[in-house]
Amino acid sequence: EAGVTQSPTHLIKTRGQQATLRCSPISGHTSVYWYQQALGLGLQFLLWYDEGEERNRGNFPPRFSGRQFPNYSSELNVNALELEDSALYLCASSLKTPRSGGELFFGEGSRLTVL
Amino acid sequence: AQSVSQHNHHVILSEAASLELGCNYSYGGTVNLFWYVQYPGQHLQLLLKYFSGDPLVKGIKGFEAEFIKSKFSFNLRKPSVQWSDTAEYFCAVNAPDSWGKLQFGAGTQVVVTP
Image (cartoon, rainbow over all chains, first blue to last red; front, side, top):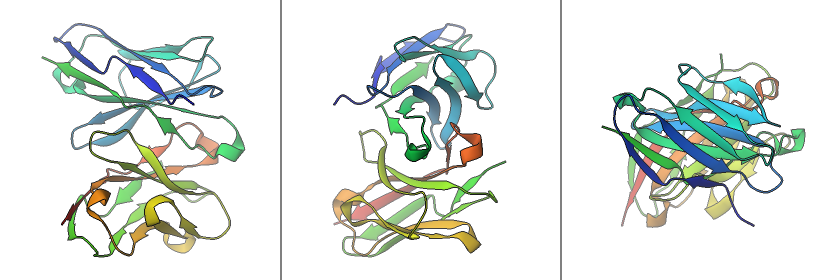
């Protein structure tokens, strides 16, 4: 069974540009989550999508946005890139059932470097 | 607001030593608790989880964790580490009434020397 897949693996942009990151969840999972893993800051929750809707959002500015498509894949958009946006962006998916208890399955991440 | 605290940012120990990583959370209700591990160059993987029942949970690769509700703690242990346990370990907490916002601790970098 394929795991969570993310693309691109690496992305280099300059300040002010836009970045788009993509994620395909595990088959059967309807929830997709985005986390930012910046050096020394651990994992910071960005966004949660389920059934095509944004369900929850972390403490990030509006220039971080995303969407979930009918096939449950998702993309994360970061507008007006700033140097501090350089980080590993992790996508995760889960079943949205009480039995799953919120267990997340992670992809390998997309490394965004802003110059 | 929920928060998750991991007591150590870096731990260095020798093979065969015992490992214990502390994790405390600040949430008064029912929680689901997780330990994730990130080996060098690999993605985050689930090590073990606690939902309910026996507070001593066994995970993969010889790891176990104990949930102590009165102390809001979920400490991770391994009696004898191996070089291959070198990784970053993350504690995470999910409260059912804030589904979808799994809160992670800052992580503990564990280095096991041969």
